[in-house]
Length: 61
Image 1: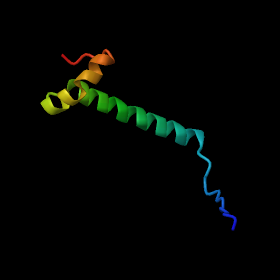
Image 2: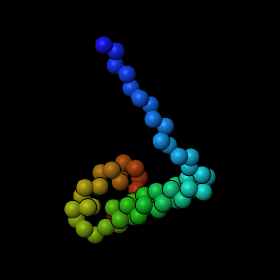
Image 3: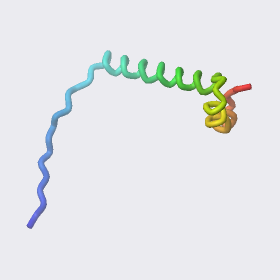
């Protein structure tokens, strides 16, 4: 008995302006996370990201 699958094309085209908004939003979120982890005075956050920051040459002290 052959197995068949139905292919559904439910994708909608994404405009250039929508891509730009998504890219800017993702960049801002990433910068906020880097800033928070890099300059946080919360010891648990600092210790969790400490080695990664130093391996990426990101100052934290």
